Image (cartoon, rainbow, N blue to C red):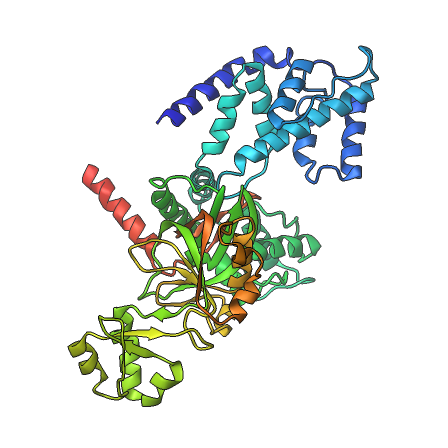
Length: 510
């Protein structure tokens, strides 16, 4: 609640005082010098994204932005020394260079604050403007606190909700008529395709010819939606474009309803698995350091939404089969195929932990029930957990792990597991986790690589010096940095259930 009060009060103060302080905060204006200094930044490649800088200065007629006092404060916040050397009278170009240097430091400060939220979003010209006026009013610490605690995901979903609401209110977007279109085609069907893309903010150009502008816009759409970026209106792209705007709006609202009660997702040290996107990402100190394809639970064995912390990594793990899978999967299969038990290397054990000899066949279920036996699968090439698993406390007995079945990662829809999350390249994830993470008390591990631990063929449980957060989320409307939305298939039908629940709640209130 405190964070919300700070946000409201800061915003009000910034708006009310911005005009009064704008001229006081701007020392001089020399358009040519500022433009030349900006060109130097772009050509020199000293700052990868000059767009926020250009817009920031263009919005104020290319004038310099920072007083010497503000420059000193920005340098303090960035941990760098302010460049205040030189004579009182300096050339306009040097003044512009130093002003832009302060702006670049401000961008670093803003990015650092924003890096603690998911999804990642870099500084904008608007952020620079607000930061500048926060400095004028001595509210810079409050402003940066707002950025670092902002529920960015929810705010961006709310922004695209407004965009799609306007489309629906205007009567939805045009409905495609052609089955396939490609470069060089001409006619009304091309015009309809252009209008359809334009409605979602893409830039397909004008006219009724399928030209390079339309191909570029279509490829951008395909890339964002996870389709083959061919620049051709194929069957999969057409199906995606035919989804009506009101349906897309429903999806966005279902995600808002799901996430408005959830705390913001931090990226200080966090693995985030988006279940319907079949994707995992690892952020360390706000920086994305790993991204990979994952396999999640099938529709009747869903991967749950979990917030926990990875505490240890186990190499060459044994699989202690959950009892429900013992009776649901393994025993029926072994009863039908007696050779299956031996091929998979399963072992039966009792409550005392001792291995029991069992005869594969139709009577297995009765034996397991009567003697209360369990199943363990030792490490090996057929082990269901593969070579490594990542453990985090949760009531569902779910974890991230390797798998011996690599072919399924080539599928677009990857809902095949019994609830756990299978990782395409788990050894790479282990390596990233262990960078400055392994408990230094275990000196032997510091001298051994992940490959060596696997090659030893012995089960080894390695604790993390600092636990890493892990969140499995269900996000079917994923806002992008470009202000677009990537929609994922609602594999568990949660969106439908979310909207039904919301409708019932509104009717009850009424």
